[in-house]
Image: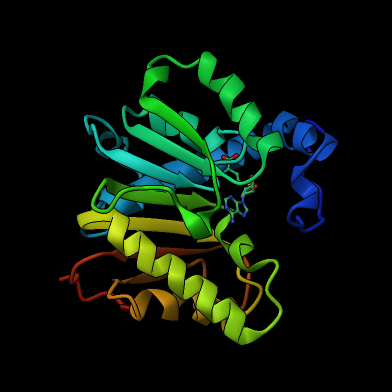
Length: 229
Ligand SMILES: C[S@@+](CC[C@H](N)C(=O)[O-])C[C@H]1O[C@@H](n2cnc3c(N)ncnc32)[C@H](O)[C@@H]1O
């Protein structure tokens, strides 16, 4: 598998349990992807005007506490630790989280990483305790077991409300995910708007109908005049 990117779309939870968790963790292209996307996401998080991308300096010097939602085997959390952040990684699958725990042992500053087995929809975290949150290739799975639109709406809404509570003032969230179409994307966007977040959708092209999408969200009003949510 090393070096080659397969075409199949991942399925939750099957793609992340038993030997699929091993396979995921051993794919070098996946590690590169997750690291690259995490760095880009952190740049989005911290660059107030979104005009400084590519400047690695903005990744240094910050002792912020970042919540990694759906941390998987820890590719994203590891790069965050390397950048000097404190991190809480949350994942619902022991097969994935246990691999993150193994990686943690080899990290400098491993004491800055806490790994929690939990559901993004029911986070065991205190109000006003998190500086920023990040989620790389995981967030669309939070409605995987919901069939009806109402059920989906309720789940994403409850999760957004809770994220709002646990973030500190001016806290931000960056979500990189793969909504299957505009309808699903809007479901997620609405949940954040309904819970007083502001922010932006970032896509490769305005015509893009599905595929990789970033949501950059802030707890308080944003002052920029780019195309807001
Ligand atoms: C593609 S992996 C994420 C990869 C991760 N960013 C990394 O660096 O390895 C998706 C992860 O989302 C997790 N996940 C899916 N739904 C979840 C939920 N409701 N709560 C917590 N984790 C969830 C899965 O268990 C899986 O490990």
